[in-house]
Length: 112
Image (cartoon, rainbow, N blue to C red):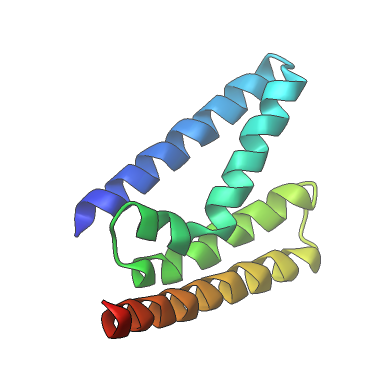
């Protein structure tokens, strides 16, 4: 149960640390690549947990906090209404992921 969460967290922390190092050293391309990966990992947290063989629903609460932080970063580290768009988008993607994986499992059980 905890292994997928620990792996996801370790990857996230490693990427976050690497993006700080890239920013501090003015490695613009590396920073952008890492920031893109962090964005994808945040917005698709449930799917990432699923690929790590975990329960997709364990991403429900973390996705809200992570996407709020992501929105804050993209808003120039200022309070802005755009943060709510990032949070809403991440929640929507989480719900769609859960629903899609539920129907996929149902179809596999019927066909399998």
